[in-house]
Length: 217
Image (cartoon, rainbow, N blue to C red; front, side, top):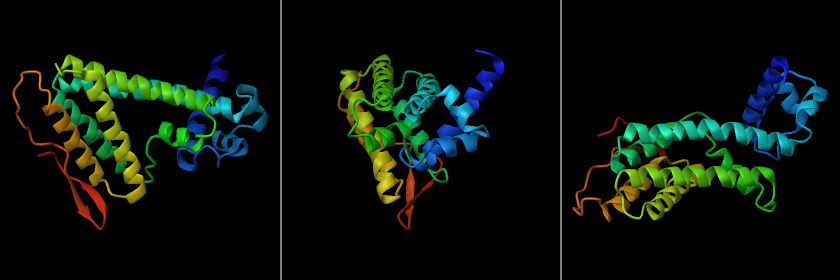
């Protein structure tokens, strides 16, 4: 693909990502995406024949970025499962504090397209979540956690649940609750056979139902 065409394609993907994140899949049309990318609608359809195809391409691009970011958790945790949980949920706490935060785009679209199980975006979302969950299991296994696949699934449910409940209630205190529950899960099967409790590093105070970020303990 010529360089100019590659640059145009990337501009379309970036513009589409922002539109989908802000409005959801159903509320965005191709005219809006073309305008946001500052191209003609004809050029847009030259690169992507449908909104479905475009959404799938956006998800593919974001998958690589998200995977790279998630991999950094394991590097920073230095094979310490408790530290991994702290990093993971502190990242969620900071991310959810951003203006107009709308949770995981993969989760939102999968729910929005719940009646279309074969939609390409749902297929990519399912693959994306499965890969991240397996990466978490691999990190936990590397840290010596027994039954790492089961623990990863439980921690992943806590993370996804926290995101959904923040969106419903506007209270980021759910991150703290999820992080503490994740730590308790890890303590039930410590690699050394000893039960040692470590204070959770994710802390949120409540103010009018909202969570404020504080430095770790």
